[in-house]
Length: 119
Image 1 (spheres, one colour):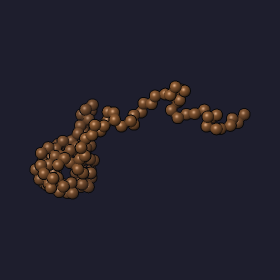
Image 2 (tube, rainbow, N blue to C red):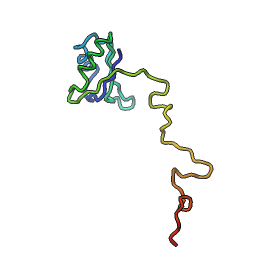
Image 3 (cartoon, rainbow, N blue to C red):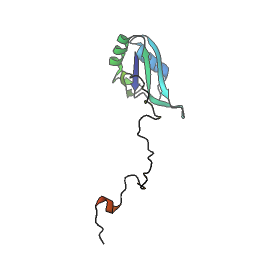
Image 4 (cartoon, rainbow, N blue to C red):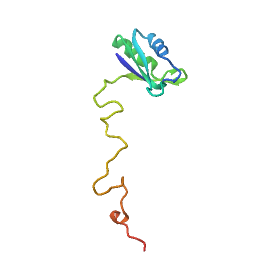
């Protein structure tokens, strides 16, 4: 079972995470995700446990528990999809093309909005 662990203290290491979950069963892997640019923790990680029963027990036992001074958020990891991640697929980027009529990002002239000029 693959387990998602959020709200991990930036001071925690992979081995700390492994030791926390080993109390519930065999841990296949424990990895805190690091930012590639800064090489600092991103505050979340994944723990893989050898069987589902141990995984469920670990989720119940660690979700909401204090770990390195922070309350963990722990649940079963969802499988990655093609559009998951930060690059593409989610259409929520900050770039917006201008239309051929020169639209300025939601700004419309007073006359287009139906306002009367005061003068």
